[in-house]
Length: 184
Figure (tube, rainbow, N blue to C red):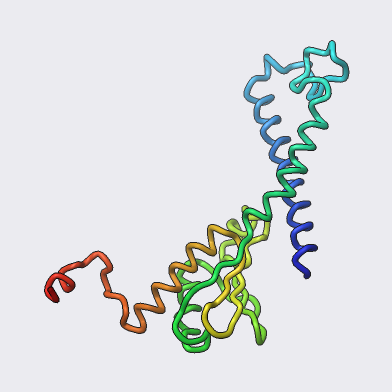
């Protein structure tokens, strides 16, 4: 799917998620305070209507806010990051796949240029609206990871550290400074 279409699909997903969350929170409030909201309705039908939970004319403002946030959110959340490694992907393939598996991901797709991972946990996938894919562009350094910002930053750091540790450039305990003091 082309990136623009993917962003539009994500925006529509997030818009509906925001609407569902609003409905759930409103339902919880009504259930928590039944004496206050008994006999009232959700949206006011006229400016004089004071029994409603939301004021007259607020529904379109809330929808407008949801549309704006849903349009902006995917651009802020889904990013690409360069991961610096020595050599190319195939030199460190096993290490990279092992790091993804230890982080709770499983390989779902692979072609000549890309390798895609998804979260193993069905609950995690559901909570992320099935937008949990992390893609690695194969080739020479730097590798390019694309997906959710939080996952990309975490996985990128794990991959860089594991590759350095396998090549012998990183001590087993990065907080053990005794060997560097002995070299002085």
